[in-house]
Amino acid sequence: MTAVRTPPRRAGRVAPTAGLRGPRRFRKALLYLALAGGAVPTLLPFVWLLRSALMQDTQMFVAPPEWIPSPFQWSNFTEALTAQPFWLYFVNTVIIAVISVVGTVLTCSVAAFSFSRLRWRGRNVAFAVLLSGVMLPYAVTLIPTFVMWQELGALDTFVPLTVPSWFAGAGGGVFNVFLLRQFFLTIPFELDEAAYIDGASPWRVFWTIVMPLSKPAIVVVTIFTFIGTWNDFLGPLLYLNDEEKYTLSLGLASFQSIYLTQWGYLMAASAAVIAPIIALFFFLQRYFIEGVTLTGIKN
Amino acid sequence: MAGMSGQRRMERRWGLLMALPAILGFVIFTAGPMVASLAFSLTDWQVGGTPAFVGLGNYTELAGDELFWTSLGATTYYTLGAVPLVLIVSFAVAMLLNQKVRGLPLWRTIFYLPTLVPAIANVVLWIWIFNPDFGLLNSLLRQAGLPTGQWVYDEAMAVPSLIVMSTWGFGNTMVIFLAGLQGVPRHLYEAVSIDGGGAWRRFWHVTLPMMTPTIFYNLVVGVVGTFQVFNQAYVMTEGGPNNATLFYVYYLFRMAFRESEMGYASALAWVLFMIIVVITFLLFRNARRWVYYEMAGAR
Image 1: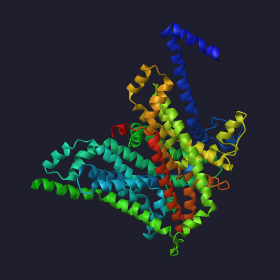
Image 2 (image 1 turned 45 degrees about the vertical axis):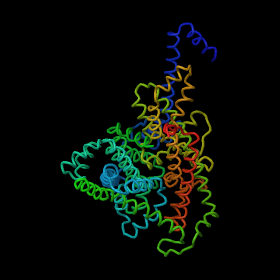
Image 3 (image 1 turned 90 degrees about the vertical axis):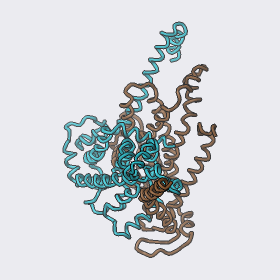
């Protein structure tokens, strides 16, 4: 190996321009090779998922494994998705997600406006205390919150899953207040002052000046709240008993416990649960990456 | 002057009003439950019964509870494996993507895709991947003529298997690293190059030191999040085999909602809280030694 590698380097010393190109091209090739080497194991589970979702059981249990379904068993999807009312789960999940997103965006941005652009005594202390809640493990508040909803007779309703979001997300959702506040601080304060001189109320300033200028941040909060609600498992697991109220995650988990070895059905159902999020991602790709980046640069 | 104070008064009134949902949310869903769970933890309380004050009884019982130590061990093992692995893989891939790569958005999407898979769909997919007879992993190993494993069905392999599974979702961490890498000032690299430094020196003396704040952020977020792992244990392994994956929050969940031991489970929650506080504190104290902050010099 060393014998093969040395000659181009020596040649490089003799003729720099010609020599540089060799190693550089070699390095480029190595780079793409490494990327491809990382991409294969990253994508393989997806391929495995799709291939299994479209395969007959008999073909799945052959060794060595086959990769192309023959025939394509599209009925896996129809059978799996009608074996349990996944359509209903989908509707339930969307209802919960939409109520949570609207509540989070509204109350978090209102709070962020107050914490960034209105002056009142105790503001900064209140904000710091609020933000400290982000560090609290969810397990600490889990039991008392559950007991509270139980006492209020709200078990087996969407209330425990949606109402907290109308209090600025509550708990971890406070992070959104932080994010929006950071964004609001970048908007020139002269805009507010001019509006106040014209006799505008803070609400008017918030609604007609700050909010329209903050679309990117609002989209980010929307996306992450939506995904968080869509993925939530522990919440629905704790609070929903009636199968008619199940969310997709809960429905999939219960489906899995019934159809333990029906891999075709299981993979078809999983693919159906994954698909909407992936579709959303492709529509809003730019905001996704921006959002993750924004959360990371917060320190 | 009168107008000014009118403005002040209006800001204060609106400021409090607009921050109210967030403040109420903090009281109802964070501070209140936090205090309540501390109070619960001092009682012997089964659901339906009346709580009886037992002082620190639950905590002394905890110290002698073998399953508590098992769950703490399993969770620590998982965290110590998953966090460094995710950090290394995502940093390496981010480094690759930070080169002049053609089709960057495509590569980034590929590596980000697994993070989009909803948690439960992710678990269901990996149950099938880990399937000892016809799963992806063993099928590939068998084809390559390598020894196969029992993965999550094997006491010794269960946690390492879940660590591998968690590494698949490295996309979020990677995007944050990538943003950090793109923020490293170019002139620092040029300075090293002028001094005759090669790629290794550029990495060791510029990239790594400049990236320490980002690494630290991902480390803290990773540790705190990973320590609260739940879904895999609930849907995939039910804590088994032989309690190998009895993760802390899953044990707490079982205590609270299966055994109905609300007092004992609350004590578990507070111990978890304390553990996370101590870990975070230690990480921050340790950070001074290796995290580079530009501001530190200015102070």
